[in-house]
Image 1: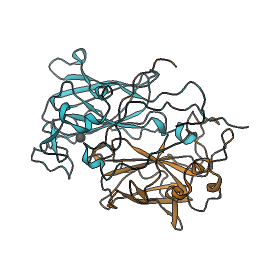
Image 2: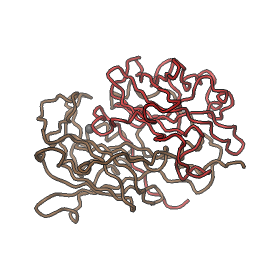
Image 3: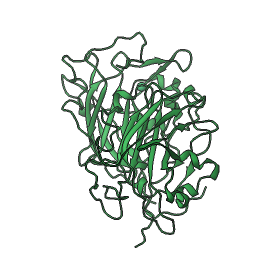
Image 4: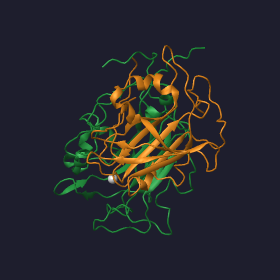
Length: 236
Length: 191
Ligand SMILES: [Fe+2]
């Protein structure tokens, strides 16, 4: 029996940052200089890890991973993981990491003079439900300075890692908060094309706030969907 | 073409990726002591030849029978014959830029349409500060007869093909360095 090429995942268009984005200095020695070779998606590319590993009882609540509660504004972040055809991606692992309320990461290489919070590690993981929905509780991260250029500050953000259902769908990105005045000055945010970068900004969600407890943000993530037709020989 | 939702853009993992992505057993694609296990390791280098100490390598592969425990394997999802085989590996680079996984060699994959069979390989994602999107490559294995007819290797210029082939450096050890730039820049793939 001859197997046919699988139906490929759609190529992203006008979405991802160019690797050689000069405004972000670290790209200089790290962005490959040769164009990637476009290859058909075969079985290794249309499959992928469906594992989620062990999820600890407080992995979804970054405010409950220590004796006491971290300082900062308590928030929930919720949304759906979808593919570009609008189909929910169920049972997929979502990993997050972030700075504390003062903008400091609990990481040995983050040494700027903002306080560490002994009650905040800043890592979390959740699995989407059958409708592709995820939700976690945390504190709103602070902005932080970095060495990219004089007086450079990153807008507040939460790092997100997603698997989807196939190797081709893998995505690592950052979620931002509405109306951050630092957007205008941040080369990482601005590396994504205009018209696409706005998709990384969460929405304040009054309906999801919890009285006397937490503010709420909503952010949907869209991964590559699949072509409707079988593979055709790629052409540049 | 039906109406498409616009995709979420990629962003760099940044320098603090370990806070979210470091798995204690991430490098164990198979449990220690698995018959036929091999270690694949290497250094991730930047364009100045300096090891990248805040990177992440992820691997995805078929089992030794060339099958995937995944519903989109057209032959059907099967449980791997190797107990505890995950197919997926993850290794943060250490202070010397070194990454490493423990696995078993995948089997060859069946021919698709008019292609030839695919030689044993791993798909690889590379993440790091300074990479605004992951870059993708493949690991093949030196000495596998199928390498000469593999359809993906055939699409790579002959003089750069060696960057995709792990060198056998021990009884059960392979070495695969990744060069993000330079004379030996690794071949990266758009999938
Ligand atoms: Fe960050």
